[in-house]
Image (cartoon, rainbow, N blue to C red; front, side, top):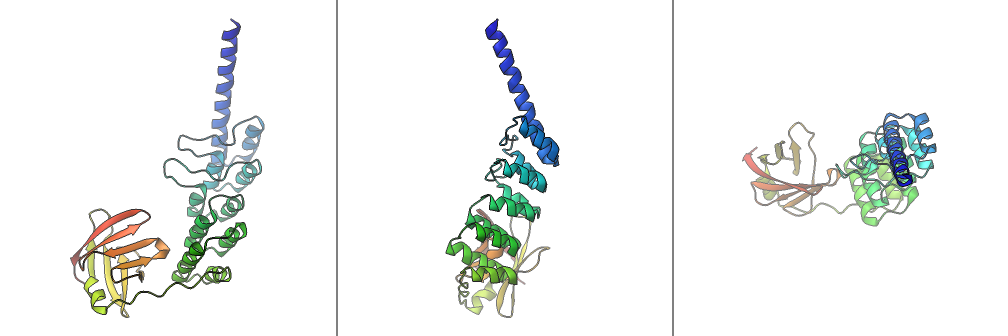
Amino acid sequence: MRRLASLVLATGMALLAWDANEDLLTAARTGDLASVRALVAKGAALEAKTSYGQTPLYLASMNGHADVVAFLLEKGASPGVQDTFYKAPILAFVLQRKHYGIAKMLIAKGAGTVDENLTAVAEIGDAGLAQAVLDKGKPSQQSLDKSYEIALQKKQTDLADLLKSAGAQPPAPPAEVDPKVLESYIGSYHSEQFPLDIKIFLKAGKLYMQAAGQPEFLPKAKSPTIFEYAAAKLEVEFTSATTFTLKQIGREFKYNKVAPQ
């Protein structure tokens, strides 16, 4: 009888803990600071997780609840969590949703690596966030130079000046490509793997690309067949005058020319 009572008590305590954790996740998601404080005081787990691996700090951060984020960080919540569905760290969602004040708090508490964070904030062009990253640690020269190149491509003067003062080196000049080779690439291209057609054209002797419905951009020639646009982490490799492979963040898409310009 005593063993049965102990089992019932343990089961009941486990259920209460589970409910408290679920309530904490909900309170963090909705930004209910008072409830978050009360639940943490009652013993709810700071690192409780949803079925997608999102913690209270993750939920509060991605939904822009700065006061809840500050409280959870003060209590020791880990800023290094990655969800299991998108495989995205907290900072990725925060930057995507433009919660820049929260991003500064997470960076200061050690979310991500210095190199990862510098690349991420360079892509959005925020000099204040870049300074927060630099205050946290020293990036590699490669990361510093790549972020500087991105800032230059996007004409983000403040960010470029900051990175230059931090030791970034000017990007290497583009490779020299025979004008006849560039002309051979001109045309409209289609992919069965990606929904946007891409137009390639020349302007002032330089090769430009433009996806349907998107602004044109100027990729940098790394060789006669490989062109890179660092601002979008994009590389285009021509396998012939009528085909190319578009590579971006670990994905590859085959394109074929469907019409000359």
